[in-house]
Length: 470
Ligand code: BG6
Image (cartoon, rainbow, N blue to C red; front, side):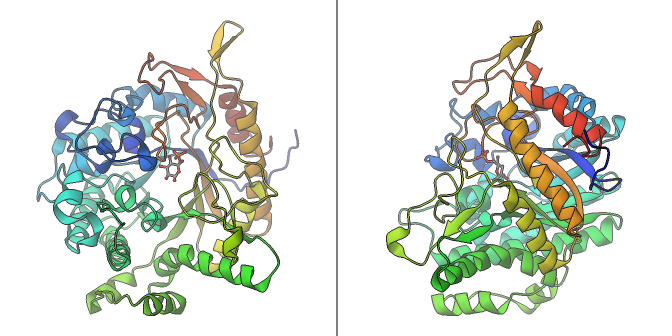
């Protein structure tokens, strides 16, 4: 073990989850339905008309009732920060009410009490793929401008109630997934033939305005709060060195970077206006919208799991497996069982790209390996010997260290699914990310008991040594 570390004092180490993937209790204490409650197979399968017993998210990992035990385990690893999301439909069950549901707010008070008890800083996602179902069905989700007002009321309620206790806020999880997963990401029902592009881009604009308005409200109501955007990051490499492939990469990159550009610069970039022109899309953008967008974020957060390649040659366009952003597979990389191509160096590239481009502090709020784990007994204790997960996380964190030495400002790192949770894309429990194993299976059986995996002790050492043990 070396004794030096590139990680600065005060670097925030921790883990991340989302309400719909862990809480369960989908209809308790006044909670309304969210889009997730009718997505039994994740984004890979059809939605159901109503909640069905095969939807693992209805019970999740029962965090709603076991949060104290879970947070105590996070504290045992030494977490300095915990990222979680607030379920919109616990606070506004249908989304368009004028008064919030007190029982929903009280649940998050209890979570915050527990975090405070252990000295863990909360990092709260306001909307993580959990649009109230009523807003999807009655309004067409974010295609309707009215959602800006509903979200504004929801965000104001959270800042008023929790603003003194929560410093770090994220407005929309992976906001750039909207065009790729409209129902999960934006509550937009998908008709046969798909959602027209005009509507998708209008929904994107509504979310960007809502995010900026929430940032403005936070400054009024909770001046100490820091508000960040959250984007899905994915470095894109040219499949060959041909200029055409490099241009295809630029186009694909622009499609992702526009969200961060608007969040950090307060206006739409020229390349995006050109895309709209060429597609014949005419967005409804008011003067008030333009003024709202100037409320830029304090920091940029992002998820990082994999990189992809891109080509201009249609004959080489073999779609990369398992990611919602498209692109093609990179022949130089290995992939996880779900086809996500593993690329630690890509994380250093993304950190440098975002820092060079936006000059805002960065927060890595998701990273990890989804893998099948096997519960075994070692020295009389049930555990998982997850050396593959340790290797993945170690390699990625070494690259974060490299980026820090490059001069990139990184506030912290929260690994994804620090406790096993239901997967977003496939709605499986067998795609596990956690340091903590949860005894629940894809068929819904299991005791819900928690067990420390080998990576649990490994991560505790990383945190204790502030990265020197990597
Ligand atoms: C991100 C989402 O896209 O990736 C999470 O913000 C999700 O909600 C995570 O769980 C990992 O994806 P999956 O499909 O393996 O759960």
